[in-house]
Length: 498
Ligand code: BGP
Image: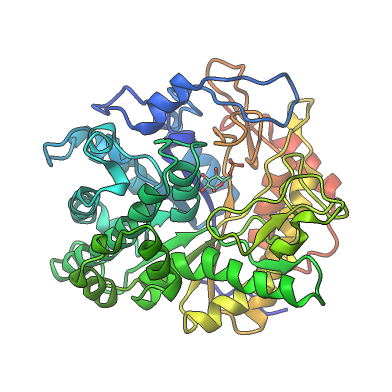
Protein backbone atom coordinates (compact mmCIF):
# COMPACT_ATOMS: atom_id res chain seq x y z
CA UNK A 1 0.00 0.00 0.00
CA UNK A 2 1.29 3.53 -0.86
CA UNK A 3 2.47 5.54 2.09
CA UNK A 4 0.47 8.54 3.26
CA UNK A 5 3.16 11.17 2.61
CA UNK A 6 4.35 13.51 5.36
CA UNK A 7 2.10 16.39 4.18
CA UNK A 8 -1.05 14.27 4.08
CA UNK A 9 -3.65 15.96 6.27
CA UNK A 10 -5.32 13.80 8.93
CA UNK A 11 -8.07 15.93 10.34
CA UNK A 12 -11.51 16.05 11.93
CA UNK A 13 -14.37 18.27 10.74
CA UNK A 14 -17.22 20.03 12.44
CA UNK A 15 -19.50 23.01 11.97
CA UNK A 16 -20.34 26.11 14.00
CA UNK A 17 -24.10 25.78 14.38
CA UNK A 18 -23.73 22.14 15.37
CA UNK A 19 -20.91 22.42 17.95
CA UNK A 20 -20.26 26.02 18.98
CA UNK A 21 -23.16 27.21 21.15
CA UNK A 22 -22.64 30.71 22.57
CA UNK A 23 -25.39 31.73 20.14
CA UNK A 24 -26.28 34.82 22.22
CA UNK A 25 -22.75 35.64 23.37
CA UNK A 26 -19.92 37.77 22.05
CA UNK A 27 -22.01 40.14 20.02
CA UNK A 28 -23.50 37.37 17.88
CA UNK A 29 -26.98 37.81 16.47
CA UNK A 30 -29.49 35.28 15.15
CA UNK A 31 -29.27 33.14 12.05
CA UNK A 32 -31.88 30.98 10.35
CA UNK A 33 -30.91 27.94 12.44
CA UNK A 34 -31.68 29.68 15.75
CA UNK A 35 -35.32 30.40 14.92
CA UNK A 36 -35.74 27.05 13.11
CA UNK A 37 -34.59 24.94 16.09
CA UNK A 38 -36.72 26.97 18.51
CA UNK A 39 -39.85 26.86 16.35
CA UNK A 40 -39.54 23.17 15.36
CA UNK A 41 -38.30 21.77 18.69
CA UNK A 42 -39.10 18.03 18.77
CA UNK A 43 -37.70 15.15 20.84
CA UNK A 44 -38.76 11.66 19.62
CA UNK A 45 -39.13 8.69 21.94
CA UNK A 46 -35.87 7.43 23.50
CA UNK A 47 -33.69 5.27 21.16
CA UNK A 48 -35.92 6.00 18.16
CA UNK A 49 -33.74 6.70 15.07
CA UNK A 50 -35.97 9.66 14.23
CA UNK A 51 -35.29 13.35 13.69
CA UNK A 52 -34.66 15.25 16.94
CA UNK A 53 -34.73 19.04 16.64
CA UNK A 54 -33.17 20.41 19.76
CA UNK A 55 -31.73 23.66 21.09
CA UNK A 56 -28.36 24.72 19.66
CA UNK A 57 -28.06 27.65 22.10
CA UNK A 58 -25.22 25.83 23.87
CA UNK A 59 -24.79 22.75 21.60
CA UNK A 60 -21.44 21.19 22.66
CA UNK A 61 -20.26 24.58 24.01
CA UNK A 62 -17.17 24.64 21.82
CA UNK A 63 -17.39 28.45 22.15
CA UNK A 64 -16.36 28.16 25.81
CA UNK A 65 -14.41 24.86 25.74
CA UNK A 66 -12.37 25.19 22.53
CA UNK A 67 -9.02 25.56 24.34
CA UNK A 68 -9.47 22.25 26.13
CA UNK A 69 -10.83 20.67 22.95
CA UNK A 70 -7.64 21.75 21.17
CA UNK A 71 -5.67 19.90 23.88
CA UNK A 72 -7.71 16.79 23.03
CA UNK A 73 -7.04 17.29 19.30
CA UNK A 74 -3.35 17.61 20.07
CA UNK A 75 -3.44 14.29 21.95
CA UNK A 76 -5.19 12.78 18.96
CA UNK A 77 -2.27 13.84 16.76
CA UNK A 78 -4.27 15.43 13.93
CA UNK A 79 -2.58 18.10 11.76
CA UNK A 80 -5.82 19.67 10.51
CA UNK A 81 -9.19 20.88 11.80
CA UNK A 82 -11.99 21.67 9.36
CA UNK A 83 -14.26 24.35 10.76
CA UNK A 84 -16.72 26.80 9.34
CA UNK A 85 -16.96 30.27 10.85
CA UNK A 86 -20.41 31.42 11.90
CA UNK A 87 -21.30 34.24 9.53
CA UNK A 88 -23.73 35.78 12.05
CA UNK A 89 -20.98 35.89 14.70
CA UNK A 90 -18.69 37.88 12.42
CA UNK A 91 -21.43 39.91 10.63
CA UNK A 92 -24.32 40.13 13.13
CA UNK A 93 -26.09 42.94 11.23
CA UNK A 94 -26.31 44.55 7.80
CA UNK A 95 -23.91 47.41 8.58
CA UNK A 96 -21.14 45.67 6.61
CA UNK A 97 -18.88 46.22 9.63
CA UNK A 98 -17.59 43.08 11.34
CA UNK A 99 -18.15 42.28 15.04
CA UNK A 100 -14.66 42.49 16.57
CA UNK A 101 -15.50 39.94 19.29
CA UNK A 102 -16.58 37.49 16.59
CA UNK A 103 -13.37 37.91 14.58
CA UNK A 104 -11.37 37.68 17.83
CA UNK A 105 -12.97 34.36 18.73
CA UNK A 106 -11.96 32.78 15.42
CA UNK A 107 -8.52 34.40 15.58
CA UNK A 108 -7.95 32.86 19.04
CA UNK A 109 -9.24 29.51 17.81
CA UNK A 110 -6.98 29.50 14.76
CA UNK A 111 -3.96 30.85 16.67
CA UNK A 112 -4.24 28.16 19.33
CA UNK A 113 -4.71 25.44 16.75
CA UNK A 114 -1.52 26.59 15.02
CA UNK A 115 0.32 26.58 18.36
CA UNK A 116 -0.44 22.85 18.49
CA UNK A 117 0.67 22.38 14.85
CA UNK A 118 -2.94 21.86 13.75
CA UNK A 119 -3.80 23.68 10.53
CA UNK A 120 -7.22 25.35 10.63
CA UNK A 121 -9.09 24.43 7.43
CA UNK A 122 -11.87 27.03 7.38
CA UNK A 123 -15.13 26.82 5.42
CA UNK A 124 -16.76 30.22 4.90
CA UNK A 125 -20.39 29.07 4.81
CA UNK A 126 -22.25 26.04 6.16
CA UNK A 127 -26.00 26.69 5.66
CA UNK A 128 -26.26 29.22 8.48
CA UNK A 129 -27.49 32.47 6.85
CA UNK A 130 -27.63 35.46 9.25
CA UNK A 131 -31.23 36.45 9.88
CA UNK A 132 -30.67 40.06 8.62
CA UNK A 133 -29.59 38.64 5.26
CA UNK A 134 -32.42 36.12 5.13
CA UNK A 135 -34.84 39.01 5.59
CA UNK A 136 -33.34 40.59 2.46
CA UNK A 137 -33.91 37.38 0.47
CA UNK A 138 -31.05 35.14 1.61
CA UNK A 139 -29.34 32.68 -0.74
CA UNK A 140 -32.10 32.90 -3.36
CA UNK A 141 -31.51 36.60 -3.89
CA UNK A 142 -28.62 38.29 -5.69
CA UNK A 143 -27.83 40.39 -2.61
CA UNK A 144 -26.38 37.18 -1.10
CA UNK A 145 -23.49 37.38 -3.59
CA UNK A 146 -22.45 40.90 -2.62
CA UNK A 147 -22.74 40.21 1.11
CA UNK A 148 -20.83 36.91 0.81
CA UNK A 149 -18.07 38.67 -1.11
CA UNK A 150 -17.80 41.32 1.63
CA UNK A 151 -17.77 38.61 4.31
CA UNK A 152 -15.03 36.71 2.48
CA UNK A 153 -12.95 39.87 2.09
CA UNK A 154 -13.15 40.61 5.82
CA UNK A 155 -12.35 37.00 6.80
CA UNK A 156 -9.38 36.66 4.43
CA UNK A 157 -7.95 39.96 5.62
CA UNK A 158 -8.07 39.04 9.31
CA UNK A 159 -7.75 35.25 9.30
CA UNK A 160 -6.10 34.49 5.95
CA UNK A 161 -2.63 34.08 7.43
CA UNK A 162 -3.72 31.11 9.58
CA UNK A 163 -4.39 28.64 6.80
CA UNK A 164 -3.32 27.62 3.32
CA UNK A 165 -6.39 25.45 2.74
CA UNK A 166 -9.78 27.15 2.54
CA UNK A 167 -13.25 26.26 1.30
CA UNK A 168 -16.10 28.53 0.28
CA UNK A 169 -19.19 26.43 0.98
CA UNK A 170 -20.26 23.15 2.55
CA UNK A 171 -22.71 21.08 0.50
CA UNK A 172 -24.67 23.59 -1.57
CA UNK A 173 -26.63 20.54 -2.78
CA UNK A 174 -27.84 19.44 0.66
CA UNK A 175 -28.55 23.02 1.72
CA UNK A 176 -30.58 23.90 -1.39
CA UNK A 177 -32.45 20.60 -1.82
CA UNK A 178 -33.47 20.33 1.86
CA UNK A 179 -34.12 24.03 2.39
CA UNK A 180 -35.41 25.25 -1.01
CA UNK A 181 -36.83 22.17 -2.77
CA UNK A 182 -38.05 20.79 0.54
CA UNK A 183 -38.83 22.44 3.87
CA UNK A 184 -36.80 20.00 5.96
CA UNK A 185 -34.18 22.60 6.90
CA UNK A 186 -34.28 26.40 7.23
CA UNK A 187 -35.24 28.70 5.56
CA UNK A 188 -37.92 26.12 4.54
CA UNK A 189 -38.70 27.79 1.23
CA UNK A 190 -39.90 24.64 -0.65
CA UNK A 191 -40.11 26.42 -4.00
CA UNK A 192 -38.35 25.18 -7.20
CA UNK A 193 -37.83 28.74 -8.50
CA UNK A 194 -36.15 29.74 -5.22
CA UNK A 195 -34.08 26.55 -5.44
CA UNK A 196 -32.63 27.36 -8.87
CA UNK A 197 -31.93 30.95 -7.86
CA UNK A 198 -30.11 29.74 -4.74
CA UNK A 199 -28.08 27.29 -6.83
CA UNK A 200 -26.88 30.10 -9.10
CA UNK A 201 -26.20 32.68 -6.39
CA UNK A 202 -24.26 30.19 -4.25
CA UNK A 203 -22.07 29.28 -7.25
CA UNK A 204 -21.54 32.94 -8.11
CA UNK A 205 -20.73 33.66 -4.43
CA UNK A 206 -17.93 31.11 -4.53
CA UNK A 207 -16.49 32.76 -7.63
CA UNK A 208 -16.59 36.17 -5.96
CA UNK A 209 -14.94 34.69 -2.84
CA UNK A 210 -12.17 33.46 -5.14
CA UNK A 211 -11.77 37.01 -6.47
CA UNK A 212 -11.34 38.22 -2.87
CA UNK A 213 -8.96 35.32 -2.20
CA UNK A 214 -6.74 36.41 -5.10
CA UNK A 215 -6.87 40.03 -3.92
CA UNK A 216 -5.97 38.90 -0.40
CA UNK A 217 -2.91 37.12 -1.83
CA UNK A 218 -1.85 40.31 -3.64
CA UNK A 219 -2.24 42.26 -0.38
CA UNK A 220 -0.27 39.70 1.58
CA UNK A 221 -3.20 38.61 3.78
CA UNK A 222 -3.14 35.07 2.41
CA UNK A 223 -0.07 33.10 1.39
CA UNK A 224 0.64 32.88 -2.34
CA UNK A 225 0.39 29.09 -2.35
CA UNK A 226 -2.88 28.92 -0.42
CA UNK A 227 -5.73 27.10 -2.16
CA UNK A 228 -9.51 27.66 -2.11
CA UNK A 229 -11.94 24.82 -2.75
CA UNK A 230 -15.61 23.88 -2.77
CA UNK A 231 -16.98 21.14 -0.53
CA UNK A 232 -19.64 18.83 -1.96
CA UNK A 233 -21.66 15.84 -0.79
CA UNK A 234 -21.60 13.55 -3.83
CA UNK A 235 -23.25 10.13 -3.56
CA UNK A 236 -21.79 8.13 -6.49
CA UNK A 237 -24.58 6.35 -8.40
CA UNK A 238 -24.82 2.54 -8.39
CA UNK A 239 -27.34 0.90 -10.78
CA UNK A 240 -30.10 -1.10 -9.07
CA UNK A 241 -29.43 -3.76 -11.70
CA UNK A 242 -25.89 -3.74 -13.11
CA UNK A 243 -27.14 -5.20 -16.39
CA UNK A 244 -30.18 -3.03 -16.87
CA UNK A 245 -29.66 -0.40 -19.57
CA UNK A 246 -32.36 1.88 -18.11
CA UNK A 247 -30.86 1.79 -14.61
CA UNK A 248 -27.43 2.53 -16.09
CA UNK A 249 -28.90 5.46 -18.01
CA UNK A 250 -30.53 6.76 -14.81
CA UNK A 251 -27.16 6.52 -13.05
CA UNK A 252 -25.58 8.75 -15.68
CA UNK A 253 -28.41 11.26 -15.30
CA UNK A 254 -28.20 11.11 -11.49
CA UNK A 255 -24.46 11.88 -11.56
CA UNK A 256 -25.12 14.88 -13.80
CA UNK A 257 -27.64 16.23 -11.28
CA UNK A 258 -25.72 15.16 -8.16
CA UNK A 259 -22.15 15.91 -9.21
CA UNK A 260 -21.72 17.96 -12.40
CA UNK A 261 -24.38 20.53 -11.50
CA UNK A 262 -22.62 21.27 -8.20
CA UNK A 263 -18.91 21.14 -9.08
CA UNK A 264 -18.64 22.10 -12.77
CA UNK A 265 -19.57 25.79 -12.22
CA UNK A 266 -16.77 26.41 -9.70
CA UNK A 267 -14.18 23.85 -10.86
CA UNK A 268 -14.61 24.06 -14.64
CA UNK A 269 -16.09 27.58 -14.66
CA UNK A 270 -19.17 26.52 -16.63
CA UNK A 271 -22.63 25.08 -16.05
CA UNK A 272 -23.63 21.69 -17.46
CA UNK A 273 -26.34 21.98 -20.15
CA UNK A 274 -28.99 20.61 -17.76
CA UNK A 275 -28.78 23.82 -15.69
CA UNK A 276 -29.90 26.00 -18.62
CA UNK A 277 -32.59 23.47 -19.52
CA UNK A 278 -33.97 23.57 -15.98
CA UNK A 279 -33.95 27.36 -15.59
CA UNK A 280 -35.55 27.65 -19.00
CA UNK A 281 -38.38 25.41 -17.76
CA UNK A 282 -38.73 27.71 -14.73
CA UNK A 283 -38.66 30.81 -16.92
CA UNK A 284 -35.66 31.98 -14.89
CA UNK A 285 -33.15 32.67 -17.70
CA UNK A 286 -32.77 36.28 -16.65
CA UNK A 287 -31.23 35.39 -13.28
CA UNK A 288 -28.03 34.33 -15.08
CA UNK A 289 -26.34 37.41 -16.52
CA UNK A 290 -23.59 37.20 -19.16
CA UNK A 291 -21.14 38.75 -16.69
CA UNK A 292 -21.98 35.99 -14.19
CA UNK A 293 -20.79 33.34 -16.64
CA UNK A 294 -17.60 35.32 -17.27
CA UNK A 295 -16.95 35.52 -13.51
CA UNK A 296 -17.51 31.78 -13.04
CA UNK A 297 -15.01 31.16 -15.85
CA UNK A 298 -12.47 33.62 -14.49
CA UNK A 299 -12.60 32.68 -10.81
CA UNK A 300 -12.52 28.88 -10.70
CA UNK A 301 -11.56 27.07 -7.50
CA UNK A 302 -8.46 24.99 -6.84
CA UNK A 303 -9.60 22.07 -4.73
CA UNK A 304 -12.38 19.50 -4.32
CA UNK A 305 -13.79 18.91 -0.84
CA UNK A 306 -15.70 15.63 -0.89
CA UNK A 307 -18.16 14.66 1.82
CA UNK A 308 -18.46 10.91 1.32
CA UNK A 309 -20.93 9.12 3.57
CA UNK A 310 -22.62 6.81 1.12
CA UNK A 311 -23.29 6.10 -2.55
CA UNK A 312 -26.83 6.05 -4.00
CA UNK A 313 -28.51 2.99 -5.51
CA UNK A 314 -30.34 4.32 -8.55
CA UNK A 315 -33.37 2.86 -10.35
CA UNK A 316 -34.96 4.05 -13.55
CA UNK A 317 -38.54 5.42 -13.44
CA UNK A 318 -39.81 2.19 -15.04
CA UNK A 319 -39.36 0.44 -11.69
CA UNK A 320 -41.74 2.73 -9.84
CA UNK A 321 -44.60 0.35 -10.67
CA UNK A 322 -42.62 -2.83 -10.04
CA UNK A 323 -43.10 -4.77 -6.81
CA UNK A 324 -39.54 -4.46 -5.48
CA UNK A 325 -38.14 -5.43 -2.11
CA UNK A 326 -36.96 -2.07 -0.78
CA UNK A 327 -37.81 -0.64 2.63
CA UNK A 328 -38.21 3.04 1.73
CA UNK A 329 -40.17 4.69 -1.06
CA UNK A 330 -37.93 5.74 -3.98
CA UNK A 331 -36.88 9.39 -3.69
CA UNK A 332 -35.72 11.96 -6.18
CA UNK A 333 -35.08 15.66 -5.77
CA UNK A 334 -34.59 17.34 -9.08
CA UNK A 335 -34.97 14.99 -12.03
CA UNK A 336 -37.78 12.48 -12.57
CA UNK A 337 -35.37 10.32 -14.60
CA UNK A 338 -33.53 8.77 -11.66
CA UNK A 339 -34.69 7.51 -8.26
CA UNK A 340 -32.69 6.68 -5.13
CA UNK A 341 -33.88 3.29 -3.82
CA UNK A 342 -33.19 1.32 -0.64
CA UNK A 343 -33.04 -2.43 -1.38
CA UNK A 344 -33.44 -4.48 1.77
CA UNK A 345 -30.43 -6.69 0.98
CA UNK A 346 -27.89 -3.89 1.68
CA UNK A 347 -25.95 -2.78 4.76
CA UNK A 348 -27.33 0.38 6.48
CA UNK A 349 -26.75 2.45 9.62
CA UNK A 350 -29.51 2.81 12.26
CA UNK A 351 -30.59 5.90 10.30
CA UNK A 352 -30.78 3.88 7.06
CA UNK A 353 -27.69 5.41 5.47
CA UNK A 354 -26.20 2.92 3.01
CA UNK A 355 -22.71 1.64 3.93
CA UNK A 356 -20.41 1.00 0.92
CA UNK A 357 -16.77 2.11 1.41
CA UNK A 358 -15.66 0.87 -2.03
CA UNK A 359 -17.56 3.63 -3.82
CA UNK A 360 -15.26 6.20 -2.25
CA UNK A 361 -12.52 4.57 -4.33
CA UNK A 362 -14.57 4.24 -7.52
CA UNK A 363 -15.92 7.79 -7.18
CA UNK A 364 -12.46 9.28 -6.70
CA UNK A 365 -11.47 8.05 -10.17
CA UNK A 366 -14.46 9.88 -11.65
CA UNK A 367 -13.48 13.10 -9.82
CA UNK A 368 -9.86 12.80 -11.03
CA UNK A 369 -10.96 12.44 -14.64
CA UNK A 370 -13.69 15.07 -14.66
CA UNK A 371 -11.72 17.76 -12.82
CA UNK A 372 -8.25 17.21 -14.31
CA UNK A 373 -6.65 15.70 -11.24
CA UNK A 374 -7.37 18.72 -9.03
CA UNK A 375 -6.43 17.94 -5.40
CA UNK A 376 -9.17 16.20 -3.42
CA UNK A 377 -9.71 16.19 0.34
CA UNK A 378 -12.31 14.07 2.10
CA UNK A 379 -13.97 16.73 4.27
CA UNK A 380 -16.62 14.54 5.87
CA UNK A 381 -16.79 10.79 6.39
CA UNK A 382 -18.35 9.20 9.45
CA UNK A 383 -21.20 7.17 10.89
CA UNK A 384 -24.01 8.56 13.00
CA UNK A 385 -25.49 5.99 15.35
CA UNK A 386 -26.70 5.38 18.87
CA UNK A 387 -23.74 4.85 21.22
CA UNK A 388 -23.66 2.71 24.36
CA UNK A 389 -21.51 4.16 27.16
CA UNK A 390 -20.20 1.52 29.62
CA UNK A 391 -17.81 2.34 32.52
CA UNK A 392 -17.24 5.84 31.19
CA UNK A 393 -16.33 4.97 27.60
CA UNK A 394 -18.04 3.97 24.38
CA UNK A 395 -16.62 0.90 22.73
CA UNK A 396 -17.60 1.87 19.20
CA UNK A 397 -16.15 -0.98 17.15
CA UNK A 398 -18.78 -0.33 14.44
CA UNK A 399 -17.41 3.21 14.04
CA UNK A 400 -13.79 1.98 13.94
CA UNK A 401 -14.77 -0.51 11.21
CA UNK A 402 -16.65 2.11 9.20
CA UNK A 403 -13.85 4.68 9.35
CA UNK A 404 -11.11 2.10 8.82
CA UNK A 405 -12.71 0.70 5.67
CA UNK A 406 -13.12 4.19 4.22
CA UNK A 407 -9.58 5.31 5.01
CA UNK A 408 -8.32 2.13 3.37
CA UNK A 409 -10.15 3.23 0.22
CA UNK A 410 -8.37 6.61 0.37
CA UNK A 411 -5.07 4.73 0.62
CA UNK A 412 -6.09 2.49 -2.30
CA UNK A 413 -6.99 5.56 -4.37
CA UNK A 414 -3.61 7.17 -3.52
CA UNK A 415 -2.06 3.96 -4.83
CA UNK A 416 -3.82 4.50 -8.15
CA UNK A 417 -2.51 8.04 -8.43
CA UNK A 418 -5.58 9.89 -7.16
CA UNK A 419 -4.52 13.28 -5.83
CA UNK A 420 -5.85 12.96 -2.28
CA UNK A 421 -4.24 15.59 -0.03
CA UNK A 422 -6.17 14.77 3.13
CA UNK A 423 -8.87 12.94 5.03
CA UNK A 424 -11.10 14.64 7.57
CA UNK A 425 -13.38 12.54 9.71
CA UNK A 426 -16.90 13.59 10.71
CA UNK A 427 -16.76 14.34 13.55
CA UNK A 428 -14.43 15.35 16.36
CA UNK A 429 -16.87 15.31 19.29
CA UNK A 430 -20.61 14.55 19.64
CA UNK A 431 -22.58 17.53 18.34
CA UNK A 432 -26.05 18.52 17.10
CA UNK A 433 -27.07 16.56 14.01
CA UNK A 434 -29.58 18.15 11.59
CA UNK A 435 -31.24 14.76 11.09
CA UNK A 436 -30.71 13.21 14.53
CA UNK A 437 -30.19 15.95 17.11
CA UNK A 438 -27.95 14.88 20.00
CA UNK A 439 -28.98 11.23 19.82
CA UNK A 440 -27.26 10.58 16.47
CA UNK A 441 -23.64 10.40 17.60
CA UNK A 442 -20.76 10.89 15.14
CA UNK A 443 -17.95 11.90 17.50
CA UNK A 444 -14.79 9.93 18.21
CA UNK A 445 -14.91 11.87 21.48
CA UNK A 446 -18.13 11.60 23.47
CA UNK A 447 -19.95 14.51 25.10
CA UNK A 448 -22.04 13.88 28.19
CA UNK A 449 -25.04 16.10 27.41
CA UNK A 450 -26.48 15.32 30.86
CA UNK A 451 -23.42 16.85 32.52
CA UNK A 452 -23.67 20.62 33.13
CA UNK A 453 -20.10 21.07 31.85
CA UNK A 454 -20.78 18.87 28.81
CA UNK A 455 -17.87 16.68 29.88
CA UNK A 456 -15.85 15.09 27.10
CA UNK A 457 -14.80 11.42 27.24
CA UNK A 458 -12.85 9.17 24.89
CA UNK A 459 -14.43 6.51 22.68
CA UNK A 460 -12.35 3.53 21.48
CA UNK A 461 -12.44 5.10 18.01
CA UNK A 462 -10.44 8.08 19.35
CA UNK A 463 -7.54 5.77 20.13
CA UNK A 464 -7.97 3.86 16.89
CA UNK A 465 -7.61 7.16 14.93
CA UNK A 466 -4.68 8.29 17.16
CA UNK A 467 -2.87 5.02 16.44
CA UNK A 468 -3.69 5.14 12.74
CA UNK A 469 -2.22 8.65 12.45
CA UNK A 470 0.88 7.59 14.39
CA UNK A 471 1.37 4.47 12.24
CA UNK A 472 -0.20 5.97 9.16
CA UNK A 473 1.01 3.21 6.86
CA UNK A 474 0.20 0.19 8.97
CA UNK A 475 -1.77 -2.62 7.40
CA UNK A 476 -5.13 -1.93 9.02
CA UNK A 477 -6.80 -5.22 8.14
CA UNK A 478 -6.11 -6.50 11.63
CA UNK A 479 -7.65 -4.29 14.32
CA UNK A 480 -6.93 -4.87 18.00
CA UNK A 481 -10.16 -3.49 19.50
CA UNK A 482 -9.16 -4.51 23.04
CA UNK A 483 -6.05 -2.37 22.82
CA UNK A 484 -8.11 0.70 21.93
CA UNK A 485 -10.68 -0.01 24.61
CA UNK A 486 -7.91 -0.37 27.22
CA UNK A 487 -6.26 2.83 26.02
CA UNK A 488 -9.58 4.66 26.39
CA UNK A 489 -10.12 3.28 29.90
CA UNK A 490 -6.56 4.03 31.03
CA UNK A 491 -6.67 7.57 29.69
CA UNK A 492 -9.87 8.47 31.58
CA UNK A 493 -7.76 9.75 34.49
CA UNK A 494 -6.16 12.44 32.33
CA UNK A 495 -7.37 15.97 33.06
CA UNK A 496 -8.25 16.77 29.47
CA UNK A 497 -11.48 14.75 29.77
CA UNK A 498 -13.62 17.48 31.28
C1 BGP B 1 -23.50 16.72 6.19
C2 BGP B 1 -23.32 18.06 6.87
C3 BGP B 1 -22.83 17.98 8.28
C4 BGP B 1 -23.39 16.81 9.07
C5 BGP B 1 -23.43 15.53 8.23
C6 BGP B 1 -24.18 14.41 8.90
O1 BGP B 1 -24.41 16.89 5.17
O2 BGP B 1 -22.38 18.83 6.14
O3 BGP B 1 -23.15 19.21 8.89
O4 BGP B 1 -24.62 17.12 9.61
O5 BGP B 1 -24.06 15.74 7.00
O6 BGP B 1 -25.58 14.59 8.69
P1 BGP B 1 -26.56 14.29 9.88
O7 BGP B 1 -25.96 14.93 11.08
O8 BGP B 1 -27.87 14.90 9.48
O9 BGP B 1 -26.61 12.78 10.00
